[in-house]
Length: 218
Image (cartoon, rainbow, N blue to C red; front, side, top):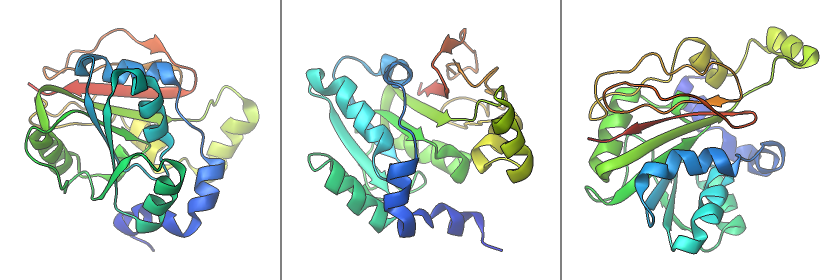
């Protein structure tokens, strides 16, 4: 059986199918994740894949001259991103190992990716790269199981790693974003909640089928 790391790095062989089949992210949800980062943030998209989230970040921040960097461990996925978004800076790396200087970014975002990382090591590394007051934003597209055939599909497939993480009460983040926060589970597929360094949760906002959480670096 493949390990989690092997599965996390297996998407490149099907990069074209991934790009065609995976949905994008609602701009409103992504804007909410980036809200604390200021008017002209430098944003790092980690586990960027073919650029699904990178594209939305670039579009909603274009008028502010935002600097967007896409980080991805899989070379084939990164090639697909470069072809789709030729103006975006790209780096090979992971959430646990970022080739970026200390305090060099205002926001780090992960779309459909946090369930692949070591939350303690990734939190520490992202915290190193973020400036004080920077924000870590996590977002997922998840199934709407109020639709009967979708609920039945989940019964058969047992859910993805992302859905299992959310169902188990995740995501979790660790220092320097405060203590581990085990209760950022979304109340419904169309809710997003923000997480601060002290673990406090704001009221949910509706974002279609995308659920997200964010943590502020002290």
